[in-house]
Image (cartoon, rainbow, N blue to C red):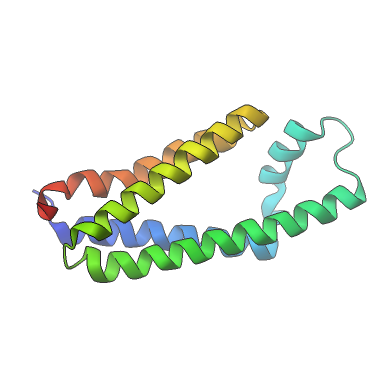
Length: 142
């Protein structure tokens, strides 16, 4: 049987991925690292010619805010996972689970509604990565 500490470390790794990806989106969305991501976004919302210059500036700003929010959310989750979750405080597990579910439902609905199905697919992967340790440690919080 896999230990609680394994799942806690797994969840901390997910937090780390969220933090790093958020910082990369915020600071490097304009760079060649984002060719695939930008191709998917631009193809969904601006097929053909791509966004004009003012739209590119807007997306740079929006990615900056999105990335900063993701990094901050990931860091907050990491503190909760490392402290109260590690101490098996039930409220911490409930806070993480409800926050992840709220994010997943709203983000995935809006992504699908806007036609950004690639993002909805990524959301399913992140939900699985974050949800698995929460499910696997349920009995630890009773």
